[in-house]
Image (cartoon, rainbow, N blue to C red; front, top):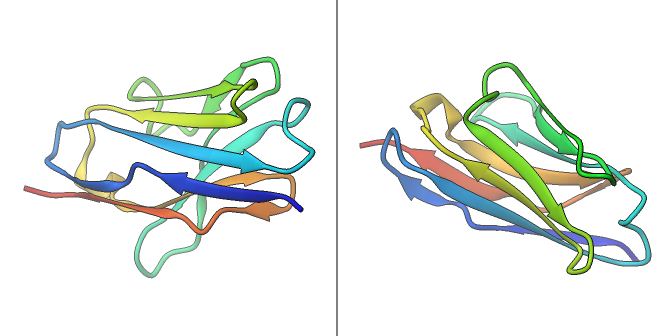
Length: 111
């Protein structure tokens, strides 16, 4: 059984930073890319970033240069370091591996 659980969300002021974590359990991970998505209130989920099994990362233009995705294969953990946060970054953030999703962690960016 595969489970993903995000953590690290919270309330931060504009310009601040947060580090999200995604813990993966189950017999898959090392050979899979893991993606981060987010959903703003009333909107559909959108792709934010992904990190491949080898550590190669890609980002949506809106976060490139501010967010950094990484992974620790030994710990089955994936991370999303978010810096220079903007109010429009506020959303529920999800990690996704194959067809599996975590329940999400909320990020609020406001002063």
